Image (cartoon, rainbow, N blue to C red; front, side, top):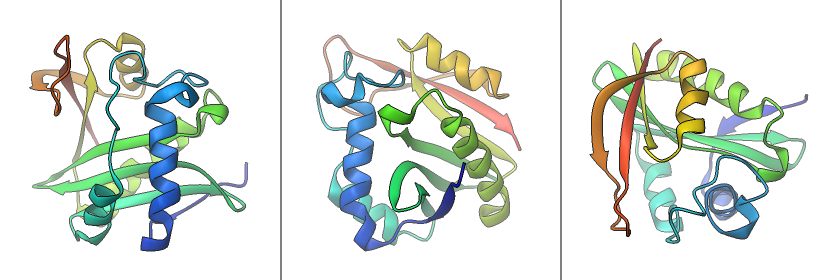
Length: 166
């Protein structure tokens, strides 16, 4: 697989936003297995949020491409001795081919190299046992911590926190 990785630039953000929304929400997301379309109807993120992330030195938005096609992304946030992983997305038509595993491996390496992170943290909606199991197979462990879902939904959702030593 000819997959390249690079930091997102301002000119990439519209395509990045479309990729994230297609992987998490709406009918397009149902082509993959990692979507939240059955749980949440509100947008996953916004162009304004992505613009702010791209400008923040403690954030890193990585794009993954095959040739000219954007096929995946991930967000890393620098924390004290750690990094937070978010917005891991793979084009729903390309899921279940190892791209997510590859993106996660690159993200862990980048967090350690760029941020000096010794621990990676992420959160998953509690009603996604198959996604929690996916991360557990990759060395992440439930911490026992829970966070409220960032936007109000009915019924309410909870995020479970997982961590991995890098």
